[in-house]
Length: 573
Ligand code: PEP
Ligand code: MG
Image 1: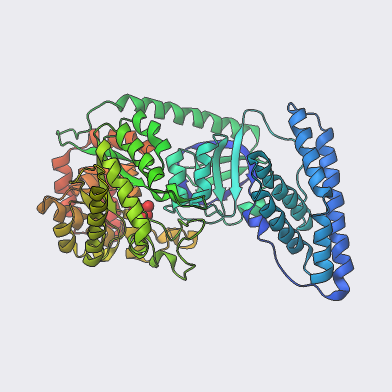
Image 2: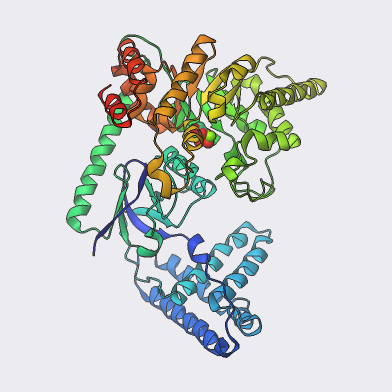
């Protein structure tokens, strides 16, 4: 039976594919101690689950598919793992001796085995830990009353829709390597969480905050993601599938038409030049940047170089990454933000502590200043790369003058150490700051004196001004870029920048949302930075805009404080 679920639209477009349920939620099983009299029954429960998974695997092996030998190979491997005493015999002992429930016993044992696999040198064998996890998942599904689906119901032409309780930005960045992933849907998450941001940068449709999708959808179910409306349709009938196939190809056609704007000069109808730059997470995003002929990199979120790994990247590795980007951009500005780790962007190891309010904790510039050695490594790498292009250093989450002073001091130290090592760098690398904390937007005087450019991070500015966690779907409806307070903070920052001849850009998600292009132009914004996939749509708005007319209209609009009137005025712009 088809059914529809509603969530938050985070990345536009339509995807049609087969569900692939990912493990995190499933592996977070209940853990409890059972009464001694229930021990034998619990062991029987486990044994029955093992027998059922054996039967599932046998059925799977006997079902004809186009990839018979691959299926046989993994079924044999999974059967072998299922028979391995390390897994089930040890799990039985945990039930008997420690009186753990069956699910808990399995997960504990799985963790032990995975740890052993991780220590193996051979990369092929090391990767087999994923098979251990999959076998345990199959067992858990049976135990939790969700027998695994075994029929290969997949249609050849469809991609994969990842279905998860939650995905971290670190998980999502993996999809850059896996072009099979056509889209993803999650139970939790907010529209400007970094997971959503990465989805947009990949150009794959995504809907988050669906609440119960992980438990409602089964592996291999066909799912349609309607990214613009924030809905998913599970198990659609042929008529609905055809309708969405048509809409998908229409959207693709519209996107390809936009490509014609690639080489157009980015200026408003009345001739005001507007710079449209790109946000990137990794050097491998460069082809997309080139495709749309972005005028520079307005934000390189360097923290993505630091994620999904045990050891932090050393100076040479970072230098290579920054140099690659600087060289590829051939003299166009490349704004590299120093590490903005913390909150939803966690390091695998050695990162900030577990905190009650991580978004208010030791993140971004606070973390860098607390880890001077790590900061020096990054600054030296950045400065070394400045020889190869037009690098600008951007400090995230500044709130006070002393943080900027300390960061500038750190940059001076990095320069001195490079000089001592006789390493060349560009001594005049501009240093700027992110305006994303209301306190910074309200006290720009101290920043314009110390910095050479400003960049408004609307994602955090909205989060902190409205006290709304950007990753929490429960308050997502309150996340309002058009709140009068937000508009005033942005407007004021752009105006103060102009008065002080300090360039101001917007690099938060508002800059890439074509619904806000005219509003930002009317506020006097001349530099926008967004995902490459959004640049041409925004350019289309810029080309149609009359800058002088918008300035006059926005000067009036900004005085409104009745939200509905404001919203209408923005729509009428
Ligand atoms: C922002 O906060 O708007 C921003 C651009 O930084 P990030 O999204 O990486 O926090
Ligand atoms: Mg931010």
